[in-house]
Image: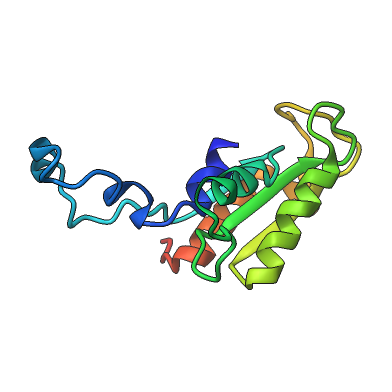
Length: 139
């Protein structure tokens, strides 16, 4: 859930929450630097963070500039149902933000040693996703 919340947080959400006049210590916190996350890898999450952030400030959290997100989720997750991953995927689809859904067939909730996503290891899928969306050159 934390990963999804980071992916859906806007730059202004916490930078402008308290004015420097109210808390002068903020002047030393590098406010000119971006706090946006470059890429997020979500395992068995949901769009609960999107709903909570939207309720907090009334602004739809899905936006085409959201952090690119790779969604990994077991199709037999008994704790966080796979339908939650589908809702998260649908929110990203509506906004045209960069993302990918990688169902883990037959997997439940938790870490999955030896299981694959997209017929490859999750490590390889995640690595390739990060390299692609960040435009990295790997040598």
